[in-house]
Amino acid sequence: MKTNKIILAGLMAVGMFFAACNENAPVYEPAQPETNEIQAYIYNTTVTSYQFTELNSAFPVVIGRNVTDVAANLTILTNDTVGAFEMDSVVSFAAGQEVDTLWITCKLGYGESYALTIDVPEEYATAYGQPTVTVNVLVDFTWLPSGVVVYQSGFWGGAQAKLPIEQAKEYTDANGNLLYRLNSPYYYVTQGAKCTKPGLHVQFLLDKDYNAVDMFDYGFFPVQDNGPFFTDGTAPINYMYWDPINYGQYCTFTNEANVYVLNIIFSDGSGLTLGAEAWQWAEGYPGELPEVEEPAEPAEPAE
Image (cartoon, rainbow, N blue to C red; front, side, top):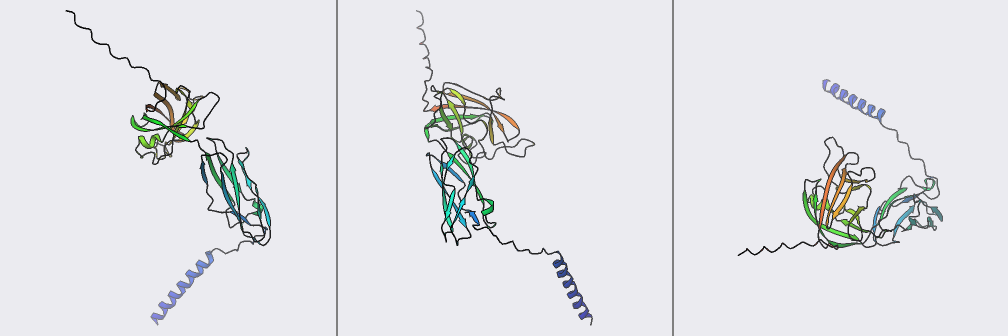
């Protein structure tokens, strides 16, 4: 009898446990059936970043639909308000056709970029697919090898490294300036510790005689991807900040022949610190270097 009581008590406890679980369990409510006649979506395999080196390059975006029994037309929406892209925004599905490809032609110029957002209109989108995607597009210059510089970083305590300098082949402006870049300077200077892979460059303008004119990028631009932190910082110091209009005393770019000095601000996106960077164009410098005077011959001793 004692054993039966123990078993009965255990069964009652288990029953109370499941009853409690049932009381707190969420009530399943089936989704409302979709009623729009297309139920379209954007394929989740869409490439979201392109870097072109030729003008008028094109890329595809695949649009699918769940309702395929009848033909249908669908107008795709974008955030392009400046004519940066050309496309036939109407996607046409034949009866039985599940997918169609939207080809988008990039009309950006060299050195220009755009984050293009593509949307399926809400009234024709399915809840079970991706209705929007953002594609980042850059039309880059052709960068020609132009020699080697010896780079010295004041931000990194005077650390030095040799690295490539390159010229943008297609760049022109009204003043006849030339566009150059230092290829991945902080990847080389920190030996991959604070910039873990090549690709973050420093771009600048020189005049026809290869004298310093200006930086190409204004505001924040990334030069590191694993930078140090301010003492109370929450984000790494990964950016240079160039603003000679408001911070002219901290943002200067000068040269003496093939030696260039860049005073610039480093930032985590909010806090600021100063850097004094310099480089000597050691190989391939196309400008004229000052002649070095030969030391005078010592005079013959008087007899």
